[in-house]
Length: 343
Image (cartoon, rainbow, N blue to C red; front, top):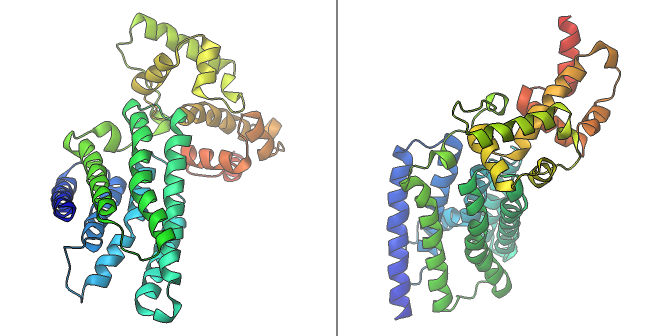
């Protein structure tokens, strides 16, 4: 009975994944999201087939189905990071992918090393799941897109329950075939994760999947601000004019307390009216504008970049450098050099 139900759930999940893949390829989704989500859907189908006790692919292609299934946590992690607009460093992607492929090859074609490849895959996959949970929950306060804030709450539950749960079980139990009830639960969670991904696609949710606006030009107020929004906007501008953005560790809660307004009102204004998707982008717009003025000031040409970063509220030089490069496409040092070269 359980086996039949498990097979039915898997077939439904496979059908849903293929349907969503078709919609994805034809939809207006930004390229980075499209690639990650397509990878997630294909790898999820491979995992559903590979872990089934009833569906058996031909022996000749079984290792390659397993390879696609191995990448399920990788694509889930990349999809989540890109959905939350927190792109991982570029060097991590090829290194992680190469490590997974090498571990898969060892597990299938170098029997003397068994089970090194098996456990290597699981350790890396658990690290990816943990990192996604860190980004989803740890950076939720910075997110100004309300729909995405909700996703940050329940996406980790699905990922932790399915990918994390399966990986922990397999790491402990080795290659022991799970109980049919566990197999069914895993398939049901994959179906739920697939439906989660499809929810945004079926609604054509541009706020989540369309291209993000350029932070440098995002702060353009809507022409139809209400009276209360106009007053709040004036309060924000007054706080920024006196340099409140320099406050170290400033979060939206701190700004709301300083202005004496509810956090949800402040969040809605900065996101929907001023055009920022993350509070850090809002702060960086003001901080980097001042940084550019300082770096181009002849009277402060010898002021260390680290001092500028700390005075503007950044907690480290790398954080400042990343924010500056995101706004200007160059480093603070190069910007200063070019400013005086032009003069």
